[in-house]
Image (cartoon, rainbow, N blue to C red; front, side, top):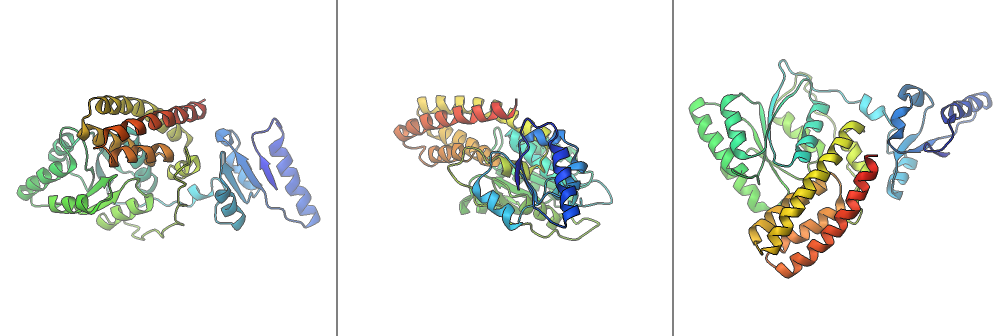
Length: 342
C-alpha cells in the first residue's frame, strides 16, 4: 500500500494504526510505503515507527527511488539516524575547514558533526585566515579548499608546512576541489597535502579519510553504505539525496537553501560582469565556484551548465550563450528554493 501523507485526512495516523490492528487480527501483513513532504516532522516519530512502515519517501521522488523501496534497499524514516554511532575520542578532535563557499562549509560541518562526538570545528574563508588560525591553534585535521580568494589552498599549505618545520609536528591536510584533474592532485601533494577529495564530497570518503589520520577510541572503521545512486544530470534538484547527506535534518536543509539563494545570486552577478568584460580567468573562477556548490547541494542541471562555462571560458560567445541558459535554470532553481522555504 502506498499512502500520501499530505492529504486532508486529519486522522491518517489513526487510520494507519487501524490497518495494522486489522492485520494482526486476520494474520495478514501488508507493506506500507509513505509518501511525504517535510510535513512528516509534525507527526510523532515514535508513533510512526510503531506502525512498522516498509519505508518512506520524500516528494518529489523518482522511479529509481521507488524501485529501491520495493527491493527493500532503503530504510524507513528515522531508522537510519538511530543506527549511526558517533566516533569517540579521549578529547574532542579539532578540525580546521578552509572553504570560501558558505553552503559547502555548512555541509562539511553537518557531515563531520553527524559522525564525530564533540568535534570542534574552526572556519576560515580563505588561505590567509586558515594560516593565521593554524599558527594560533592546535588542529588534528585540516580540510583545505584549493581555490580561495586572497590566498589559495596550495599557498596556505606551503606556509603551514614551513611553520611546522620549526614546531616539529605534522598535521594531516586534505585537499578539496571541484576539479578532479590529475594536475591539481599532483600540485596538492607537492605542496605537502596528505590526501585529495573531489567535490561534491561523498560523506563515506570524507569520514573514512578523517578516521585514517585521527583514530577514535571505538576504532572500528564504519562499513561503507550502499553507494549513492548515479545522479541524473538533467534533474533540477535531487532533494532526497541532499536530505540523506544531512540525515533528514530539516532545519539544516532550510539553512542550506537560504544560504544557496544568497550565494548564487551574488556569484551569478560577478560571473555576468566577468563575461561582459571578457575576463577569462574570472569567468573560469566564478563558474568553477558555482559548479562545485551546485553539485554539493544537488542542483544538478544548474551545476552542469556552470561546468560548461568553466570548460569553455576562453570562448566568450559560448560563455554568453551558456550564461543565458544558466540564468534561465537559476529562475527554476530559485522557484524550487522558495517553494521549499514556505
